[in-house]
Image (cartoon, rainbow, N blue to C red; front, side, top):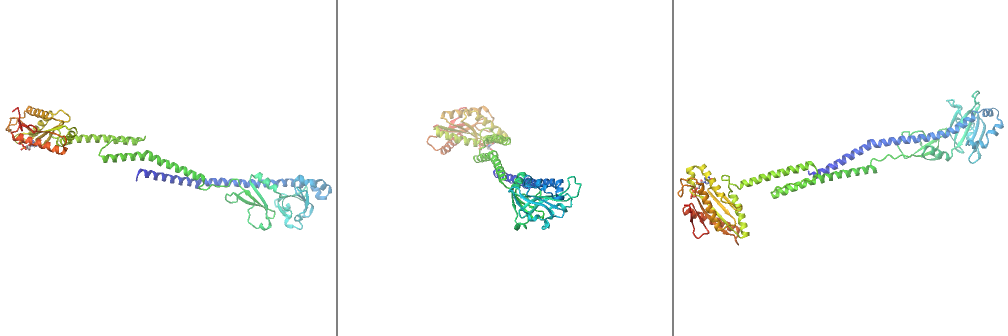
Length: 527
Ligand SMILES: Nc1nc2c(ncn2[C@@H]2O[C@H](COP(=O)(O)OP(=O)(O)OP(=O)(O)O)[C@@H](O)[C@H]2O)c(=O)[nH]1
């Protein structure tokens, strides 16, 4: 797998892993916590609404209780004096107390005083349902049967005038010293402004509608101070029940906070998009700082392999490891190039004699011929062969023969001074001297120098028929490469030198034969 593909897959894996982790955290921790918070908030809203309603009810109860536990009311129940009615039960009383009905009952539910008066529209009305003798089912709006003996009842009642809020208290002496003599009932109509007040107090959007008889059998939840096991919702319905337990008002409540966020909403998508961007950036980063330099390195090494030439890499980017890798590679290149140069050198040197070998000669000869062809100059060759070397070997031994070969080779090498010239072992006991940009005079001169150098070595050779020391026979050749094909010229030059050497041997050895001179053989002047 390529590093590039790996980086893409790693980035994709990272994206998937972090996405799953984020969504899991959201699903298992974050969203349930938000839901719990909103549930508690909605509970508080319902509880506030209930408290606001109770508060409105308690206003009515307080004034009702004040009037009931009052000596004048007690006296009024005893003797029904008109003055009490004139002083206390006039229309103004209704308006100032903001109530719509005042009813006194004796202990047998018999009406002692009854007056319905709409304090808003200032009109009188009658409520037949409050004749408790004819409507015994309504008798429980009075506190006579209250088990807790609080002497007080409040709630809602359905009447022909619409749903009403009521509050009743036992009429008794203010110091509670005498027996109860009856009950005092206050009623107040349920008007829209009550629900406006409730909405303001509870900070909720609230709409109220009276429930018709047709809808009374529907299943509604009564208003309590809690959610009653329901889930979070934007809107919910609650009802107010009358004293008989029948629904009378439907409250539609709109909560302030309701929306539990979805698992994948805009924020979650934005987060995932950002995460994707980060992962993509990481893969680009890996590509730019790691993959690209590695690819460039691979390309460079491939080119080196194709060209069969090792060159140094240039260090890329700032990473220490990559720099180190490039540096180490370059050190390796240096070492290999060094070894290559050494091997090349060794491959061009004759192992025994230490001068250039036949391979080196072939290469240099080719180059010299090409140069000569370009510059239209002459190339000269001197082929040298040790005389009677077989008898020498046989007599002195192979080891001694090797030493003599080495000494002769070194003697030859010192006669060569120009860098373009070359003395090489041509094979066995045969040597060759290559002279670039040469001339007849120069060849003659070098051949003489060689003769002198070998003579100076003075290596004793008892088995030689021509001298008492080791001698050479030489054949020379010189060719102008002008307008001639290099390959043919080379062959021709070698052939001429070889023939000249043959002639020198044939003529008695220890001499030079210059193929370019009229006289075939020139005898060694020293002999
Ligand atoms: N010691 C030693 N001898 C070698 C080496 N290479 C070739 N020779 C010997 O050189 C001798 C060459 O002998 P020949 O070709 O007969 O020539 P020659 O005896 O010199 O006779 P002429 O050349 O005609 O004077 C052989 O005996 C080879 O064994 C070498 O590397 N070391």
